[in-house]
Image (cartoon, rainbow, N blue to C red; front, side, top):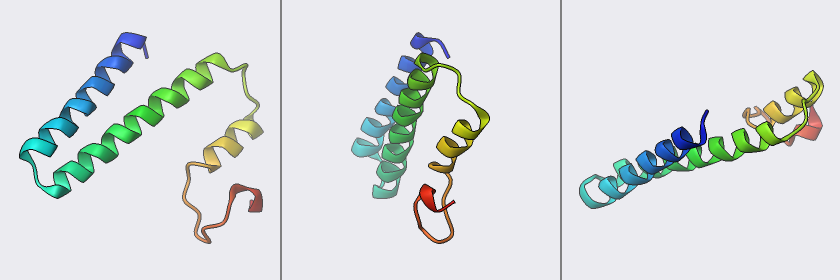
Amino acid sequence: MPTSMRGSTLAQTRSRVAVATRLGTPEDVTEARRNHAAAKLEDYIRRTVDAAPPLTEAQRDRLAALLRPTASGGDADAA
């Protein structure tokens, strides 16, 4: 995703937090903050992956496992 689109997405989610804070319900604020946090995380991950050398499939699987919930609540080392 081009840098300008990333900034635009972050600006939109940040704006939604502001609007929800001013005019929305507490649930609206919580959802807007969650969406903004996810957008920031997505932006960070994308920039990091774009700057990194190509990963092996095993490395990608290990990193993806960090984002998947586990039934036991254990860490990724248990897999």
